[in-house]
Length: 190
Image (cartoon, rainbow, N blue to C red; front, side):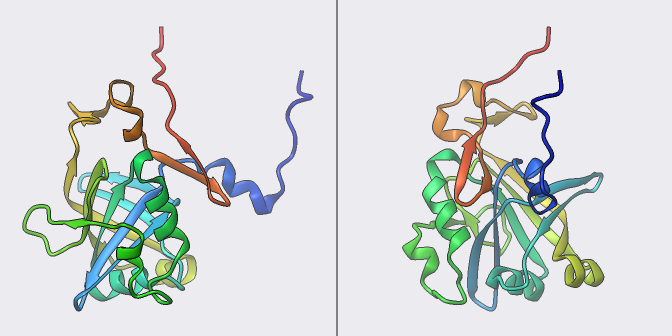
């Protein structure tokens, strides 16, 4: 009965939980825009809404977040698979023209001075809640969501509608080594 259950090495254990939606993290500071992909983002609280995201010390976007005290989490679509891979595997530290060469188009939402990535299905503008110990020890950043938007072609009435949308609107789920999944079919309980 349990022959199919096998141990997972601890260095791969995180992959058992890392198939949530891959997000794009963007920030602006002193006229510099950065966008990176992150697989480790999570809702944290309802009121006020908060989220967490892991931003490695080597990323240029992290420096922009720390400098400006704000950032955007956005949900890229299956149509943005290559863009997501490019901004996640290349560094602004090494390539100042990374955004343009990756096909990133930025847009403005509301009256916030933040870089929003066009073509995504959802955007959450966040104010950084500084927790220096968590940031330094664990690369864990907490954001209070101060504004949010979604494309009604895939999110309306307070929920996702992937089943009604073109498959290009599916969210991406990075599992490791440049391997992604798109969200699957809707399941309805009886």
